Image 1 (cartoon, rainbow, N blue to C red):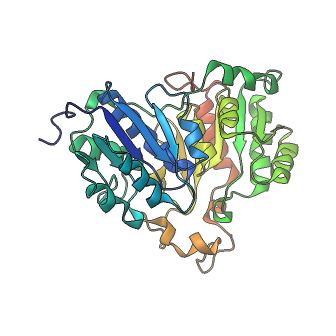
Image 2 (cartoon, rainbow, N blue to C red):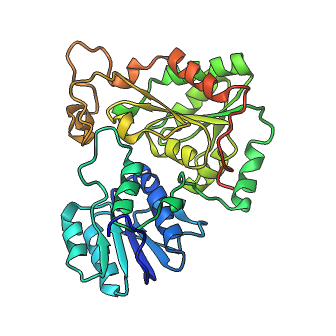
Amino acid sequence: MPGSGPPEGIRRILFVELLGGLGDVLNSLGAIQALARSQPAARLTVLTFPPGGELLRVDDLIHAVVYAEAGRARAAVEEQLARGGWDLVVSDTSYDGIDALIRDSGVPRATTNLWRSPPPDEHVGERFLDLLLSDGLIHEGSIAPPLLRLSPKERANATPALENLERPLVFLLPDAGMEVKRWPEERWGALGRALRERLGADIVVPVGSDEGQAERVAETAAGTVLPRGTLRELAAALSHADLAVGADTGPARIAAALRVPTVTLFGPSWHGRYGQPPPHANLQGYPPCPQRNVSDFTQQPCWYAGVCTLEGRAWRTCLEDIDVESVLSTTLALLGNGRAVIRGEAGR
């Protein structure tokens, strides 16, 4: 009976996460960890893309991470299914007929769509958990906020670059893979400068795809540039932060999964669906946008055009609707006495 509790006899679980983004990996992490807690005797394997799969290492709930090559998602699923022996396959991926492929494989138990008819304001991670509960694959006690785990050595290796900085330590994450997700560069600098003036905060700006951008923001904010490294090196540095501010991108989600208080700025994507869960904070650019499609924001004209297509708007992206003072006041509220606290230890 659905919801009656996880089935017994499950020894091998395959979780298929092939949506392609760092955020997608982290959105699924709560579901992956809940499955593992509900089936403590099972060996859980995650099939995903690099480099996002790196974030799942050093997690004692995940026994193996295997990678699909770009453009070969279906073939990678076929290869895993051909190995046989899976008692349960769970997938958040349905394109290229992957859902039907799993259903027709003969695996004893499968959930092939973790996105079935979601309400407009249900967070994607919560939707995954609700469906796993209704399918009887997890139990209520297995649900907890997702936690990205790091080894003590990884955290220690990040310390030298940060040890001479003052608290509160605030990471600004201005990089975004799409122009339509970028908050104006000068506002990042103004935010960092205001945090230094108000709180005496030290500002760290990691290098993303544009080293010059990180250097300019850090210079305006009188902050420190963190050289580009691996995803896990970035996560290790972020784990030392008192707060992070970023656009709706992978690094902001890494920070939240480390239990670092995070302010996330949303533009074309809808914070009610993709926002970071409380106590993190989300700010939405131009909420009344008539083109924002909460069921699939990638269908909005701005997504592929890379700029806002609304008439009468001078901005390139609705993120420009979010002013510095709004982000600053939200940041100050989260920081409180200068060092925000979220339950649990950040990736430790």
